[in-house]
Every structure is written in structure tokens, then in C-alpha cells.
Image (cartoon, helix red, strand yellow):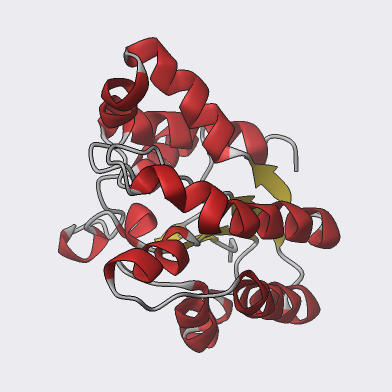
Length: 207
């Protein structure tokens, strides 16, 4: 039996997958699935993203929603909610706590199943004055964690922040360009999802 590709993360991965008969959602996971199918790749695609999740939430459901599927390729995309909850709920996650949860799940996967892995850097494209602070105050440190863990575990790394910032500049200056890719600064528009899917496919080709 062919081992699947498992995508796990927050709302950007979820993208309404629980209301989708195909269980893929309407975001980058669906676009990746369609692109792989078009090239004759028959690996099953499993999307276990859950809106609102932080790294600790992934850790809590890791056995059921990641390892139980025996992935050949495991794609992890988490982090922005670990920052966002600091600002909308007064519930921060330190970079150290984020790293502890993230390293734990990767080590568990590596030790038990040894899948190939892709780690996607969390991003914010500021569309409000408050979001201008998110990076330097919080998310930059978590992005550094993801990059470091990708190197530590031999995973492919997608530097999504710089990729999307560069692309946003082609759609307008400042907040207007950002909103073209993520209208609330966090959740991708169709254009944003296409860019994420393209970056994922390019990263998968390097494994």
C-alpha cells in the first residue's frame, strides 16, 4: 500500500477541509493535490489541519492526526496562531515553548516512521498597524525556530515570509499588496494559496 502525504497545521492548511467531500479544503493542499495528480503521482493526500491550532495543539493530536496515517511525506505548517493569540487573547507562546513542542513532534515522527518532511515558515503580511509589530515582537523568533529545526531534522524548508513579501510587491505597495495575498494579513487569498502551493511543490522536488 502506498504511504500517503500528510499535511498538518492550522487554518491555512485546514481551509474548510471538514466541509469538503474530498477532505482537502479549498487552499494550498487542494492545489498541491491537483498538481501531483496531474503528473501521475498516486500517493494519497491526507489533510488534518485544524483552524486555530498552535504547536502545542499539534503535539496533543500528533499520534491520531499525523503518525497514525504512516506518512511517507509529512508537511507541517504552524506558528502564526502562537503569535496571534498574544495579541487577540493575551495568551502568548514563548519561542522556547514553541520550539519545545515543535521539536518533540518532529523527533517523534523521525524516530518512529522516518518520513521525509517539509516545514513551512509561518508568515504575516501586515494589513493593520498592530500587525506591523507582530514580526519583530514575536513571529520572527518563531520563524527562526522553524528554519533551525528544518536544518536539524534534514527537512525541506519553505521561507514563506520572504516569498510572499516579494510577491506582494507585485500587487501594490504596502498594505494593498499584502491584502492581495492575505486579506487579513494571515489567511491566503486564492493568489496566496497558489504561491504557497508552488513553493511546496518546489520544495518537495528537492527531497
